Image (cartoon, rainbow, N blue to C red; front, side, top):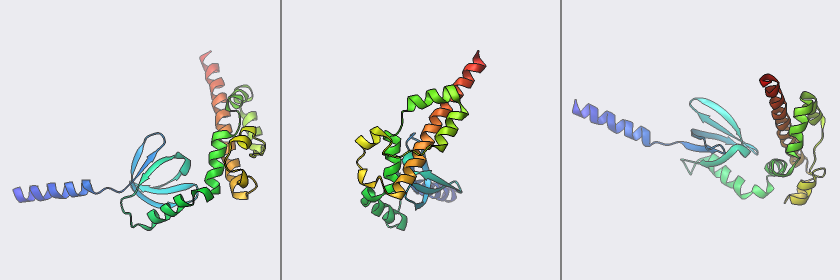
Length: 177
């Protein structure tokens, strides 16, 4: 009986020491699983039997278990070519420099869904964003289609989210009063 117990404990210790790939998000949540693919702007991660596609802008760090894994070696190549990753550069420029978020909060508060529709129909570019044009290190990519596509998506989603927050605040004030 002791041998069976010791064998079971040894097996449990062996399984618990087996660690998969670890993904840490910007909000400090940590997930253990397997990185399946790394795309230009997202990571496909499998944990608890489910696949998740996580935007690269939401990932703080990744730790790989197997350094010989093909996904890991591709990840290292992607890091080496990070200056050439136009989509990620576009997203980061839009997130850091585009738009006046306070103004869009007020627009959402005052005009609600109409402000969000207006932003969805807008065509944000780094040339129109004064701060983006001045602060970006990727001015040479401003005319690249991939860069512009990712820039527009990120700028629109960020500003629409801010307007939705303003509209939500207006609705909460109505409910409270």
